[in-house]
Image (cartoon, rainbow, N blue to C red; front, side, top):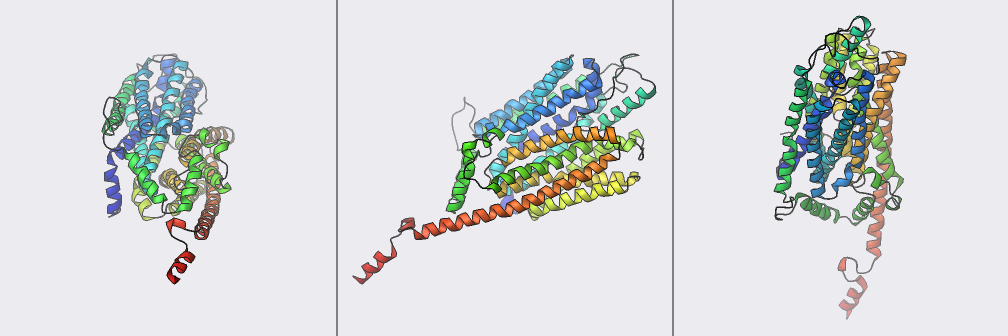
Length: 521
């Protein structure tokens, strides 16, 4: 078997919580990937320009980043965590139901911003809750969690496609037709929103095609509706609904008791864990930065947070930029693929990410997370470098896209499990990493898009090599500070043990000299 009986038993004990968090992330994947293919239809609905409508999606990504930053506030108790998940999931369904009614681009931007804020809260809380439940065994379950977001991102374009209009707001001629055809194919087959398309206006002249995209949004709202109901049912099972009487102990109470028993075996680790807990625990970014809570912690503690976040800033930035601009690269010289053939690249990329996360579930159990991270980061660099070398080969573009998705797929959950394990599941690693990953995806899309626009499509892969190489160097720095932090903890343990030996009557035992005198008498 890939997973032993202990992991299976642990999953069965926490199955209801785990399945609920997985379903929330499947819904998250649907939501984050569903909007991209509908961008031109929403442009027609709001009678806006293409550049204006892309800022609507930027507002969603920006608020998703804010939600990820503050989501840790709701982790303090199981009730607040599940309540935030319930409200956020319900908000997403409501927003998708009212999007077809938004005929103004500003109103649509506000709606997208609210949905992004809700998705950011979901992103942080689901990760924190799984880490809290499974701790040192969380790598396997985090891989599964992020498999579901990839699966949702793969499925969502299939839901939207039947309802998309083929010609947008009208018929176009000349270069306008070619440009709009380019964007239509890119956005139809890309499961993420393209923030940085800034080219021109879409003409509103000619025969306007009747759009039925509102049915797609309503279907999305219905698909997402069981998620808040599942969270509500979990709250009912845990006796957290105010109208229900208190019953059995909550799951997190039992987990915290197990954590205390495990930490009680080593006095120095308890002391370090307490200091880290005072630094904010798995809180939000802002509570982690309070000066009063950061005193007495080693430099390595902060560097682990910073470097771990920077690694994901780079790698998740590659994911967003590659999924967003691989079509642009493929249709431009020297590759010059047909539009329809190039349109499959983004779907292949996300399919590879989904398969990679599924494959990483047993691998994360069999191999150390650190080794998986080194393998994936090195594989991503080599793959993008080979794509740069064989830039004329359309066959290798498809192969390289698949390999790139496979290598990048499990870096986020592996990094999350690795940094939390280094810090003994204290500190603010989850909030920092989730926030950094979202920021990297948003910033790198804008940065790479502007470079491609000024320097040409060839710079797309060159940017990928540079970003991946920087990410690998940052990870080497993280390994260095991991060793320093481990030595710090070892030194703290030795000092604590020496203090216990020098303390008379430690652990309730009588001193040696009085015992000898008693025996002599």
